Length: 113
Image 1 (tube, rainbow, N blue to C red):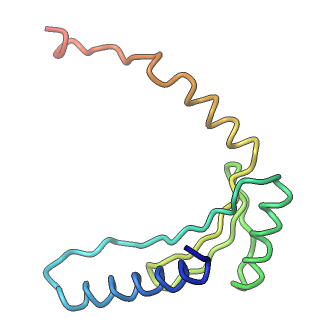
Image 2 (image 1 turned 90 degrees about the vertical axis):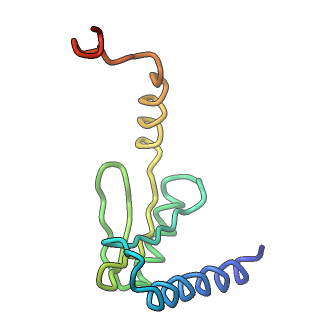
C-alpha cells in the first residue's frame, strides 16, 4: 500500500468510525483517542529530525521525557502525536524484557493454602 493510499484509507476509517459512533449512541465511546506516528527506526538524529519536521507542521513544541522525543496536537479528547523512541530507551526496554519469565512473584498465603 502506498503512503498516499494508506493516508486516504486511514482518514476514511477515522471518518467512518466517527459516523458509526454518531449513528449508534448506545455504543460507549472511549474517554480519549490517540493517533500515534512513530518514525521508522534510524539514528536518534534522524528520527528526531523527522519529529522536528512534524512539530513544525503541527505548530507544536517538542516534548522530551522518559527517552521519548515527541510533539503533539489535541482536538478536544483526540490527540495526534509523533514520537521518536530514542536508542537508550529502546535498549533499556530490551534489557528489562530480557528478564521476562525469569522472576516469578511469590504466592501469597491464600493462594498457597
